[in-house]
View 1 (tube, each protein chain N blue to C red):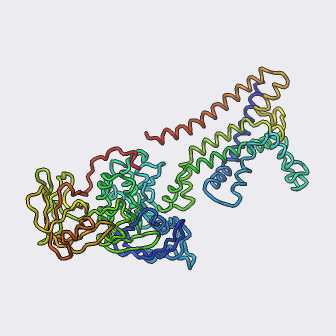
View 2 (view 1 turned 180 degrees about the horizontal axis):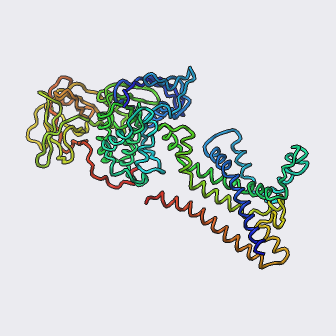
View 3 (view 1 turned 30 degrees about the vertical axis):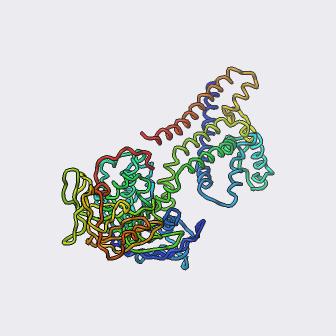
Length: 380
Length: 226
C-alpha cells in the first residue's frame, strides 16, 4: 500500500436545511464521523470523494489538492484514489463477486500495486474465497458488505471512506462483521474515514472522532472521551452508551470465558459468557446501564464480576447520570445511573467503589468467526 | 409470384433493418440524456420525440414530403441539389425511422432510468471516467431494456404503412413493403395474396415481439435470484 497521507478538509456546502461547514484534518489512522442521521455526514463524504459538486473551500490529501474553489480546481472522483464503501454495498449486479473485487484493478495497477498479491490478501483477510464465483445478487447482507469492502481495498485506495458500512445489518450480524473491519484497520496502512452513528462501532474502530450536528463540528477527540459528552451522547442511535474495551481471552471454564482487561500489574480479569469461536485479542462490550455501582463491597451476589474502581467524573445526561470509573487499567468504564443516584449514594470523583457486572451483560466482539450467516436476503 | 413475394419480404426486412440501424444510436443517446440530464427544454424535446406516436402516420409522411419537396426546406431549390429520396426505398427507410424512433427513445429512457445512479457514482470512485462508467456499468445494466426497445422499434418499422406510402409510394418491385402489398392485394380483390402477406407479417411480427417479451421477462426472473 502507498504510504498514508493526511487529509485536510475545509469546506462549506449549502444543504437543504442548513449549511455544512467543517474544517478538520485527519492525523490518526482511523477517524470517525459521528452524528445523528441528517447531520450532513454523507454529504461531507460525497464532497470529499468528489461525487457532490458545489462545495466551496479546500480538500487535500497529502500534496494533492482535490478541491480548491478559489483556484477553481476540482479533481474528478475517478482521479481521487478513494476506496468508498456505502451502507448498501452497491455491488455491480452485472458482475460476479470476483469481478466486483477486481473492478478497480486498473487503478490499483496504475498506483503501482501488485494487484494479484493485494487480491489474495484481501480475500484471505475478509474470508471471501467461498464467495468469489457467486452472483452478487444472491449474497446476504453481511457477505455483500464484505465484498464491497474488499472491492474498495483492491482498488489501490489512498483513503478509505466507509459510510455506515454496518448500518444496514441487524445487531448480531454487525457484531460478526466488526472484527473484519478491525482486521482491515490493524493490518493495512490506508487512512480511514468512518461515518457512523453507532457509538460501539466508533469506540471499536476509531482513534479519533469528529462529531457533526446540523452541518457543524460540535466535538472532536478521543472516542471514549468524546462519546461520554452529554451533547454527543444524545446523538447516539439508541441513546445508550456501551463501553467497548480491548481484552485478551485467557481461558474457558464451564459456561464462561475469562478475559483480561489491561496489561501487567494493573490488569484485571472479567468473566463473560462462554465463547468457543474466538481466541486472543477481542473486544468486550458492556452496556453502561447494565453495570451496578456500590459504595461498599457487596456480599453474596449472583453477578460474577465485582470489580474495585475509582470514580473519575460524574456527568448529568438527560435525567440520567453517567459515572465514569477507572478500574485501574487506565481504561475508563462508564456506568449509567438515575439522576438522583449520585447524591443518594454520596458518589463523587475520587471515591473508591465497586462495580457489579453480570457475566451475561458482557458481549464479545470476537475475531471473525467464519460460520455461515443465516440467509438474510432481507437484511437490507 | 414467388419472385414478387420474396422481393416484398426482402425489401420489408431491408427497410426495417436499415431504419433501425439508423435510429438505434441517436435514440439511445437521447434516451440517456432524457434519463440522466437536466437541461433547458427537456420537456419540449421529450414531447417532440414522442410526437410521431400520436400523429396519424399519413400526417407524418405528408410533413416529410413537404420538407423534401422540390420547393421545401430540404428540397432541390433550397439545397441546390436533389437528395433523391422521394419514391425510393430510402424514403421508406426515412418514414419507418421517423415512425419508430419514439418507441426506441422511450424504452431507452426507461431502461436507463432503471439503472441506480449511485452504482455509476461507485464506479467513478473506482477510477472509471464518465465514458468508461457508461460503457462498463450503465450500458450493460440497461442492455436488455435497450435490446428490447430496439426490437420494438424494428417491429414498428416492419409494419409501417401510412407514412411510407405517402413518402415512398407503393410501387411494386421498388417501394412496396408487406404492409402496402397487403393493401394493394386487398384493393384489387386478390384475397389469397393478401392472406399470404398477412400470414407472413403475422409470423415475423409475432417472433419479434415474443423476442422483446422474453428479453424483458428474463431480466425480471434473474433479478429475483437464481
